[in-house]
Image (cartoon, rainbow, N blue to C red; front, side):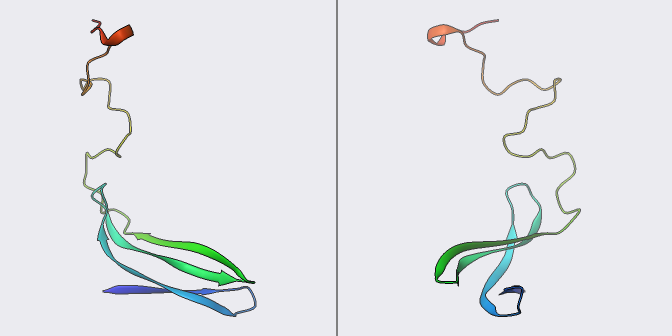
Amino acid sequence: MIVNADLKLSDGQSVGVVTAYAKKFRTGSVGFYGNGKAEIAGKRYQVQVQLVEIGTKPVGETEPGSPKPENEPSEQPKTGRRGAKTS
């Protein structure tokens, strides 16, 4: 399935269509994503469309880059100056 997003100005004039394709995001959520370009009043714009289905992120997963809960060990050892390991 694909989703077409029709870009319109407030007066109803269509300035472009962005097609979003089915995608599984890095977080595990599923939905649609598409990008493209549109021209409005002689200026070009980059456009992104993202639709994420609510409730599709796997239970217990964390966002990439988010801090780990305090009871989980860090992936990298803590280091002091010049890379010396600290306790």
